[in-house]
Length: 138
Image (cartoon, rainbow, N blue to C red; front, side, top):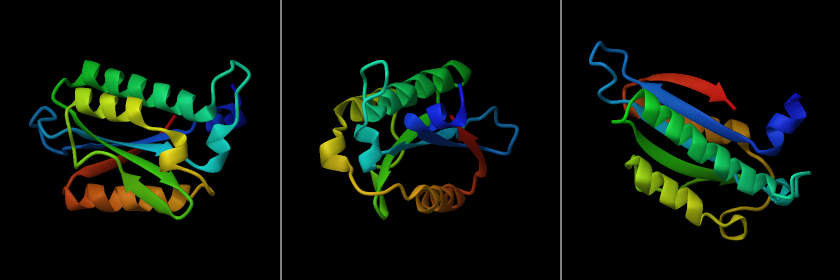
């Protein structure tokens, strides 16, 4: 799969992990979902890029729970010039997944893709939590 295909369902996940030996007691994952106008494009499988991004985000939440069931999640969407929190801070996986299921591109998105600004905001959030930050591109 080429980079262009990876970008069509862009979900960037910023995972933060405690740098201690406390067995990841404070593991948190920040999920950023692209809600820009291009995410309305229909893919060859008939789904929109936005629908694919939501599916991918939920699968990453499930994968993280398999590693550490105590992980909490914060969901943000980004489009135009802003990133918007969709959860009130870090929440349990069920609440994050429900939030993602309820996202509608036409109420949360539009405009251009401010990926760099959104990642910077996510890193600032991570640094306020005093955690080590690891960036993962899906």
